[in-house]
Structure formats: C-alpha cells, structure tokens
Length: 139
Image 1 (tube, rainbow, N blue to C red):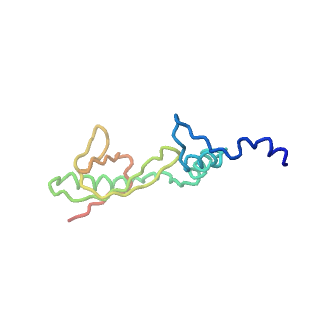
Image 2 (image 1 turned 90 degrees about the vertical axis):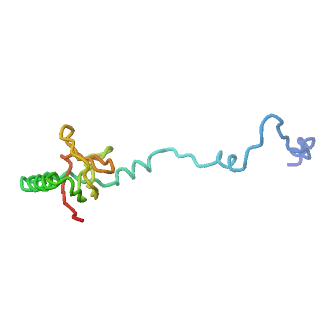
Image 3 (image 1 turned 60 degrees about the horizontal axis):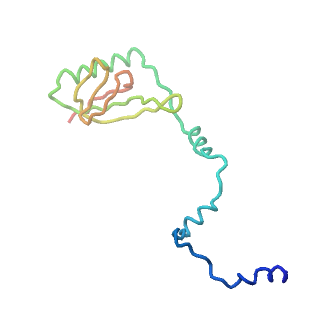
C-alpha cells in the first residue's frame, strides 16, 4: 500500500484545481448526476392510468328523452325568466373507453340548434346528445 502512496506523493498535498473557464457546479446539480436511473420511465403513469375508472354512457329510455324535451321546452318558453338549470351530462374520456358524468349549475345563454348544443352564460358548451338530466332551479 505504501508503494502506491509513494507513487502519488507529488500531488497528495496540492490544492484541488478550479477552472477559470467553467463555473463550479452546485451541490444540487452534482447530486442529480447520481440520482437513480428509472429504467421503465412512464411505467408508474401507465399503472395510474389503468387504475383510473371511467363510466359507460347510459342510453336514455324514450320516457327520459321525452322528459328532457319537456324541460328544455319549459326553459325556452320563457327565456326572460332566466332561471338556473342543473345539467348532468356525459363527458367522453380522451384516453380510454367510457367517460364520466358531470353536473353543472348555470344559466342558459342560447341553444345552438345547428351545432346541437346548449351554451351557458359562462360559455360552457354542452352537446344535447350528452345530456342525461336537466332540471330547472327556480329562484
């Protein structure tokens, strides 16, 4: 062992060289070099995505469709009344089959018959085909 130390005696007590061209790396950046390597990057995200639950879109019965039409006609019959409406609608999931039902409370601004959607005063657009429940909430 002493023979190996003798080999480096000329540099043992020298100062650590500091570059004049490059700034010294921070301790945080130096530590990042030794961070564990994730061989399966994205694996945890894939597991979380698989575990995320979605719902199937329910098909409305003829009676439920009629009830939606009646409620919509009530809203349209007196647009100046401007009651709030409670809407439950289906939102398609972009990453997997199915989606989720959302419920929103708002005031109807207008109905886009050509586009087949309700437009609320807060600019929320809801497709008519996605509406599951519709209820007038009187003031």
